Image 1 (cartoon, rainbow over the protein chains, first blue to last red):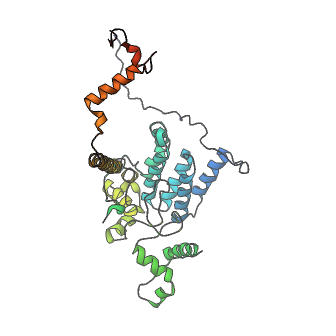
Image 2 (cartoon, rainbow over the protein chains, first blue to last red; image 1 turned 180 degrees about the vertical axis):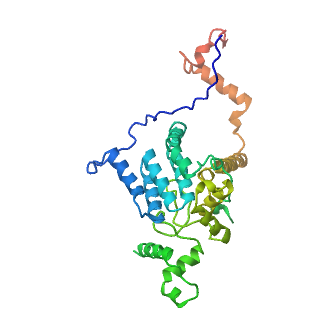
Amino acid sequence: MFRFPLVRVQRILRKPNVCALRFTSSQQSAESDEEFDNRYEAYFAKDGMDAWAIRKGINDIVGQDLIPEPKIIVAALKACRRVNDFAVAIRFLEAIKNKCGSRVDEIYPYIIQEIRPTLTELGINTPEELGFDKPELAVQNVYEMH
Amino acid sequence: MAGRLLALSARSIKARPVPLGAAGAHSNPALDATRAMIGNREIVGYGMNGQPHYYDRSDIPLPAIRWKEATADIKCLREKEKGDWRQLSMEEKKALYRASFKLTYSEFKAPTGEWKQIVGASLMLVSVALWFYMAVRVVTRVPLPDSFSEEKQQAQLRRILDLHVNPITGLSSQWDYEKDDWKK
């Protein structure tokens, strides 16, 4: 009689098939996806970046019609570490979860899986671990204060 | 143009601390106006449009200013933030977040239930309109003409049958003219 030991296998998620992660609509800017990724990764990896530029970069990448590649996210988190701003890193992760839209259940776990080494190395918790995935505070709507 | 100047001066405000009440403060009216608006909060970025406002927006995650003013315990947390983040406790990490941001994504995207107010108010107005309609119908009622009485209606029916109105498919086709009664 064979006894199989119960082994907990960590589910390694494959990259979700998000077709056309980025639409290049204009004919002039024929930047490929790799060039785009490299450009943003180089932006966040630049030495001597201050907190102002990092915030601008994060607002820009969140404003694009795409979900950033894990390598860009890793570069941005390391930039947050360099300028000693923890809250910005958490906000960026929340923004990425929001960018996943309706496919958050398949894309967000993959991204967290990919950036988990960086998260443990820098000591950044995901918003879920901090309890920010459920509402904690409720404030009155400013438009309904009389 | 003025917005751009304000944005540029906002960036320099971040670098230079201006002593309050000194003569130097009055040489920068943009700074005074900004400080009067936002208090002692640190201006940290470009934000949405360069103006030093705070907002919670899902499409622009990082506003131009922090949410809370720098009090003593927040300053102490900032010192700790410069060290290893693994040394921070959960409460300190949450406090750091709340110092920079008012609401988390899940909080400002939470459903407000406003649709219930709107649907309820609309239905109430519709019911008021229906009441008005019924009132108008009641108030403007006039007595029926006497041609609606039972004998007069029977006389009209007799006349219809005598004229053979609609004899093929209508009322007169149901009348038996030999027996002078309805067909069985």
